[in-house]
Length: 244
Image (cartoon, rainbow, N blue to C red; front, side):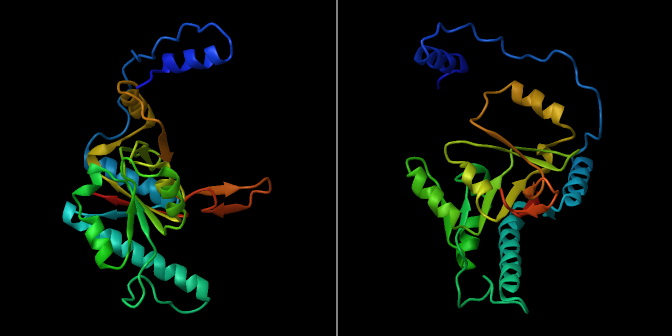
Protein backbone atom coordinates (compact mmCIF):
# COMPACT_ATOMS: atom_id res chain seq x y z
CA UNK A 1 0.00 0.00 0.00
CA UNK A 2 1.31 3.47 -0.90
CA UNK A 3 2.22 5.50 2.15
CA UNK A 4 1.23 9.11 2.69
CA UNK A 5 4.81 10.19 1.96
CA UNK A 6 4.87 8.21 -1.32
CA UNK A 7 1.62 9.83 -2.38
CA UNK A 8 2.81 13.36 -1.61
CA UNK A 9 6.10 12.68 -3.44
CA UNK A 10 4.15 11.58 -6.52
CA UNK A 11 2.04 14.75 -6.44
CA UNK A 12 5.17 16.91 -6.06
CA UNK A 13 6.83 15.16 -8.99
CA UNK A 14 3.80 15.73 -11.21
CA UNK A 15 3.93 19.42 -10.29
CA UNK A 16 7.65 19.62 -11.03
CA UNK A 17 8.55 20.25 -7.41
CA UNK A 18 11.07 18.67 -5.08
CA UNK A 19 9.32 16.47 -2.52
CA UNK A 20 9.54 17.91 0.96
CA UNK A 21 10.00 15.92 4.10
CA UNK A 22 6.75 14.52 5.45
CA UNK A 23 5.58 15.92 8.78
CA UNK A 24 6.20 13.58 11.71
CA UNK A 25 3.35 11.23 12.52
CA UNK A 26 1.16 12.53 15.30
CA UNK A 27 1.81 10.61 18.50
CA UNK A 28 -0.31 11.82 21.40
CA UNK A 29 1.50 11.82 24.70
CA UNK A 30 -0.89 13.36 27.21
CA UNK A 31 -3.22 10.94 29.01
CA UNK A 32 -6.91 11.50 28.40
CA UNK A 33 -8.94 12.75 31.35
CA UNK A 34 -11.35 10.29 32.94
CA UNK A 35 -14.64 11.70 31.64
CA UNK A 36 -17.95 9.89 31.42
CA UNK A 37 -18.89 6.29 32.17
CA UNK A 38 -16.71 3.36 31.17
CA UNK A 39 -19.15 0.46 31.70
CA UNK A 40 -20.60 -0.92 28.46
CA UNK A 41 -24.20 -0.77 29.70
CA UNK A 42 -23.91 2.88 30.79
CA UNK A 43 -22.25 3.84 27.51
CA UNK A 44 -25.03 2.10 25.56
CA UNK A 45 -27.70 3.97 27.54
CA UNK A 46 -26.03 7.34 26.88
CA UNK A 47 -25.54 6.54 23.20
CA UNK A 48 -29.22 5.68 22.80
CA UNK A 49 -30.31 8.81 24.65
CA UNK A 50 -28.22 11.09 22.45
CA UNK A 51 -29.08 9.37 19.15
CA UNK A 52 -32.80 9.48 19.85
CA UNK A 53 -32.53 13.23 20.53
CA UNK A 54 -31.53 13.68 16.88
CA UNK A 55 -34.21 11.38 15.43
CA UNK A 56 -32.19 8.18 15.22
CA UNK A 57 -33.78 4.92 16.34
CA UNK A 58 -32.09 2.30 18.53
CA UNK A 59 -33.26 -1.32 18.57
CA UNK A 60 -31.87 -3.32 21.49
CA UNK A 61 -31.33 -7.04 20.96
CA UNK A 62 -30.04 -9.62 23.43
CA UNK A 63 -28.09 -11.90 21.10
CA UNK A 64 -26.98 -12.35 17.51
CA UNK A 65 -30.01 -14.48 16.56
CA UNK A 66 -32.25 -11.40 16.91
CA UNK A 67 -30.33 -9.20 14.47
CA UNK A 68 -31.72 -10.57 11.18
CA UNK A 69 -35.41 -10.58 12.29
CA UNK A 70 -34.94 -7.02 13.54
CA UNK A 71 -33.56 -5.92 10.15
CA UNK A 72 -36.64 -7.41 8.45
CA UNK A 73 -39.04 -5.69 10.87
CA UNK A 74 -37.34 -2.33 10.33
CA UNK A 75 -37.62 -2.67 6.57
CA UNK A 76 -41.25 -3.77 6.65
CA UNK A 77 -42.21 -0.83 8.87
CA UNK A 78 -40.27 1.63 6.70
CA UNK A 79 -41.82 0.27 3.49
CA UNK A 80 -45.33 0.46 4.95
CA UNK A 81 -44.71 4.07 6.02
CA UNK A 82 -43.40 4.94 2.55
CA UNK A 83 -46.41 3.32 0.89
CA UNK A 84 -48.80 5.16 3.17
CA UNK A 85 -47.13 8.49 2.46
CA UNK A 86 -47.22 7.83 -1.28
CA UNK A 87 -50.90 6.88 -1.29
CA UNK A 88 -51.91 9.75 0.95
CA UNK A 89 -54.26 7.72 3.13
CA UNK A 90 -54.30 4.26 4.68
CA UNK A 91 -51.44 1.78 4.78
CA UNK A 92 -50.43 0.41 1.40
CA UNK A 93 -49.03 -3.05 0.69
CA UNK A 94 -45.47 -3.16 1.98
CA UNK A 95 -42.72 -5.70 1.75
CA UNK A 96 -44.74 -7.85 4.15
CA UNK A 97 -47.29 -8.39 1.34
CA UNK A 98 -46.27 -11.77 -0.12
CA UNK A 99 -47.70 -10.82 -3.52
CA UNK A 100 -45.10 -8.08 -3.99
CA UNK A 101 -41.37 -8.44 -3.42
CA UNK A 102 -39.59 -5.61 -1.70
CA UNK A 103 -37.02 -3.40 -3.39
CA UNK A 104 -33.36 -4.39 -3.12
CA UNK A 105 -31.32 -3.96 0.05
CA UNK A 106 -27.59 -3.22 -0.24
CA UNK A 107 -25.16 -4.40 2.38
CA UNK A 108 -21.46 -4.49 3.03
CA UNK A 109 -19.67 -7.74 2.23
CA UNK A 110 -18.18 -7.81 5.69
CA UNK A 111 -17.30 -10.58 8.16
CA UNK A 112 -18.94 -8.52 10.91
CA UNK A 113 -22.29 -9.03 9.17
CA UNK A 114 -21.87 -12.56 7.82
CA UNK A 115 -22.72 -14.40 11.04
CA UNK A 116 -26.19 -12.93 11.56
CA UNK A 117 -28.05 -14.69 8.74
CA UNK A 118 -29.24 -11.37 7.34
CA UNK A 119 -29.21 -12.40 3.67
CA UNK A 120 -31.33 -15.51 4.22
CA UNK A 121 -33.86 -13.61 6.35
CA UNK A 122 -34.18 -10.83 3.78
CA UNK A 123 -34.55 -13.19 0.83
CA UNK A 124 -37.21 -15.18 2.68
CA UNK A 125 -39.14 -11.97 3.37
CA UNK A 126 -38.94 -10.94 -0.29
CA UNK A 127 -36.09 -8.41 -0.13
CA UNK A 128 -33.36 -9.04 -2.76
CA UNK A 129 -29.86 -8.50 -1.36
CA UNK A 130 -27.03 -6.84 -3.27
CA UNK A 131 -23.47 -6.63 -1.98
CA UNK A 132 -20.13 -5.74 -3.46
CA UNK A 133 -17.48 -8.43 -3.59
CA UNK A 134 -13.80 -8.04 -4.40
CA UNK A 135 -13.37 -7.88 -8.18
CA UNK A 136 -16.91 -6.64 -8.91
CA UNK A 137 -17.58 -3.61 -11.11
CA UNK A 138 -17.74 -0.66 -8.69
CA UNK A 139 -19.69 1.64 -11.02
CA UNK A 140 -22.30 -1.01 -11.75
CA UNK A 141 -22.66 -1.69 -8.02
CA UNK A 142 -23.11 2.02 -7.24
CA UNK A 143 -25.84 2.20 -9.87
CA UNK A 144 -27.67 -0.67 -8.19
CA UNK A 145 -27.25 0.90 -4.75
CA UNK A 146 -28.90 4.08 -6.05
CA UNK A 147 -32.09 2.05 -6.49
CA UNK A 148 -31.85 0.25 -3.14
CA UNK A 149 -34.40 0.93 -0.41
CA UNK A 150 -31.92 0.45 2.44
CA UNK A 151 -28.27 -0.08 3.27
CA UNK A 152 -26.98 -2.41 6.00
CA UNK A 153 -23.54 -1.76 7.51
CA UNK A 154 -21.47 -2.75 10.54
CA UNK A 155 -20.16 -0.08 12.90
CA UNK A 156 -16.48 0.11 13.76
CA UNK A 157 -17.11 2.31 16.79
CA UNK A 158 -19.62 4.74 18.29
CA UNK A 159 -19.46 7.87 20.44
CA UNK A 160 -21.88 7.94 23.36
CA UNK A 161 -21.59 11.66 24.08
CA UNK A 162 -23.00 12.63 20.66
CA UNK A 163 -24.93 9.54 19.55
CA UNK A 164 -22.51 9.09 16.63
CA UNK A 165 -21.75 5.90 14.73
CA UNK A 166 -18.34 5.48 13.09
CA UNK A 167 -17.84 3.56 9.84
CA UNK A 168 -14.57 2.67 8.11
CA UNK A 169 -14.61 2.44 4.33
CA UNK A 170 -12.81 -0.47 2.68
CA UNK A 171 -12.58 -2.55 -0.51
CA UNK A 172 -15.93 -4.28 0.16
CA UNK A 173 -17.32 -1.62 2.50
CA UNK A 174 -18.47 0.89 -0.09
CA UNK A 175 -19.37 4.44 0.93
CA UNK A 176 -22.44 4.35 -1.32
CA UNK A 177 -24.15 1.77 0.93
CA UNK A 178 -24.25 4.19 3.87
CA UNK A 179 -24.99 7.26 1.74
CA UNK A 180 -27.41 6.60 -1.12
CA UNK A 181 -30.34 4.48 0.17
CA UNK A 182 -33.06 6.38 2.09
CA UNK A 183 -32.86 3.97 5.06
CA UNK A 184 -29.63 3.01 6.84
CA UNK A 185 -29.41 0.11 9.28
CA UNK A 186 -26.20 -0.19 11.31
CA UNK A 187 -25.23 -3.07 13.61
CA UNK A 188 -23.34 -1.97 16.72
CA UNK A 189 -21.96 -3.91 19.68
CA UNK A 190 -21.96 -2.31 23.13
CA UNK A 191 -18.24 -2.90 23.61
CA UNK A 192 -17.51 -0.74 20.54
CA UNK A 193 -18.85 2.42 22.22
CA UNK A 194 -16.52 5.03 23.71
CA UNK A 195 -17.67 8.06 25.63
CA UNK A 196 -16.10 10.92 23.70
CA UNK A 197 -14.44 11.58 20.36
CA UNK A 198 -10.97 12.20 21.81
CA UNK A 199 -10.71 8.58 22.90
CA UNK A 200 -11.69 7.42 19.44
CA UNK A 201 -9.19 9.74 17.74
CA UNK A 202 -6.49 8.37 20.03
CA UNK A 203 -7.38 4.87 18.88
CA UNK A 204 -7.36 5.87 15.21
CA UNK A 205 -3.88 7.42 15.59
CA UNK A 206 -2.47 4.05 16.65
CA UNK A 207 -3.65 2.07 13.61
CA UNK A 208 -3.43 2.28 9.79
CA UNK A 209 -6.06 4.70 8.52
CA UNK A 210 -8.77 3.45 6.18
CA UNK A 211 -9.55 5.37 2.99
CA UNK A 212 -12.35 7.17 4.80
CA UNK A 213 -13.75 7.36 8.32
CA UNK A 214 -17.42 8.34 8.43
CA UNK A 215 -18.96 9.97 11.50
CA UNK A 216 -22.73 9.80 11.25
CA UNK A 217 -24.96 11.44 13.85
CA UNK A 218 -28.62 10.78 13.09
CA UNK A 219 -30.44 11.11 9.76
CA UNK A 220 -29.10 13.47 7.10
CA UNK A 221 -30.02 17.10 7.77
CA UNK A 222 -29.69 19.96 5.29
CA UNK A 223 -30.62 23.59 5.88
CA UNK A 224 -30.52 26.58 3.53
CA UNK A 225 -29.75 30.21 4.31
CA UNK A 226 -33.31 30.69 5.57
CA UNK A 227 -32.90 27.80 8.02
CA UNK A 228 -35.44 25.60 6.27
CA UNK A 229 -34.49 22.13 7.50
CA UNK A 230 -34.86 19.15 5.17
CA UNK A 231 -34.29 15.53 6.20
CA UNK A 232 -32.73 12.95 3.90
CA UNK A 233 -31.47 15.09 1.02
CA UNK A 234 -27.73 14.42 1.32
CA UNK A 235 -27.94 11.01 2.92
CA UNK A 236 -30.37 8.56 4.54
CA UNK A 237 -33.50 10.08 6.02
CA UNK A 238 -33.89 7.21 8.48
CA UNK A 239 -31.11 5.84 10.69
CA UNK A 240 -31.67 2.64 12.69
CA UNK A 241 -29.01 1.20 14.97
CA UNK A 242 -29.32 -2.41 16.10
CA UNK A 243 -27.51 -2.45 19.45
CA UNK A 244 -26.22 -5.87 20.38
